[in-house]
Image (cartoon, rainbow, N blue to C red; front, side, top):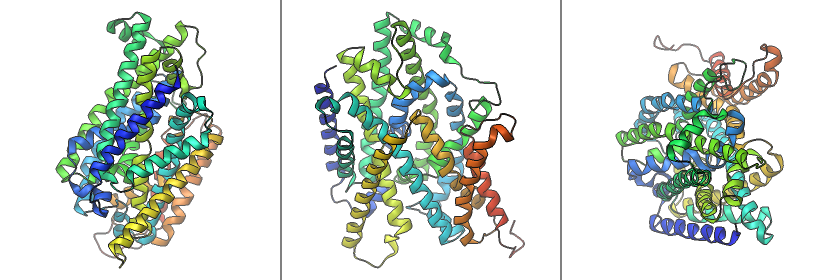
Length: 486
């Protein structure tokens, strides 16, 4: 497919995003940037969060991942429902009761300033690392199939992409993102559904034939019974319970959108709605992966690296319509991967690290400092994208969860201890515990097959990491000061 139409789609979509940004950022102040004045309709937030939860990783990497893991990822998604129930029942009421802007303020109230800044720092690290992987994937595909045609280097494409996101989130913040996410969700889902239809049409399949072929294929395996396999179904399910707890419930990016709802009741509706639709939506993405593999085998296509499978077939094999549909979904996924992170990390640095909301400075100066932080976060994201291009060598969806296992584990342990135990801890010991936990988890992961009879860790390493942090906090707890202390 000629890259010119793809470039035009990128330009038109970007213009549409900027029009939404302009409409939502008028008279924007800090409260609009951080919480959208708490006026976001819950159904808009819920729908937009589908795209934010999926992003470019699911759009590009999950279909290709089917080649190696079949449908075993569905066991992870099945666990999401229980994880979201914890968020609805425990975390959202906590955040609304304390009237938080940054969810990590809870750690200061519960443990102290060291724990507070440790939690915020781990979120910033987690989000920047995870988003650099997500942005790298989508920017790299845009570069391969669009910009390389005009000999525009990858680093320049990355600069253009990050600059555009910086500009449209600069003023409106979370209020802008809530509405742009709805647009991105729509185009991502339409792109996948239409792509499946076009492949089925190319193969001469009816809808019934398509479903039958997928179900009977070698890729439809959901349950892996070998307990030593990293895809063992019980490990996948338990990991799925904790992944949304940490990557949504303990994540400022995702919770900031929930906190922009009018009240707790609306925020709960949002989370319940999201949890119910993720299973069929992920099934749709995995089905696309199976259809792509069947199509590639039937046509003698050598399957490229997994993250490029969708792009390779859509752009080079299925003709102009499929290429256009793919490009629309890709551009939507590209923006969805990054805009919320820039806003959430900016919020965390301003509120948790610099504590601008507590400093006796003018509103004008506070906004200028927020602009500066936003720019620096964008610059760091750009540098990380360029680093990932040199280092990444596996499916990005796998990399994202691997990183999360180390960086979100301490957050899981901190919140679990804070909510389950009444005892105080020695606040200055928290940063040390939070740093030791991922190091111990890494050692266990590295030696697991030798020490644990061939056992290989998967996503459940996140749980192990959280338990190590919990144990460290228990060892550093303070003596009882009242009979009610546990």
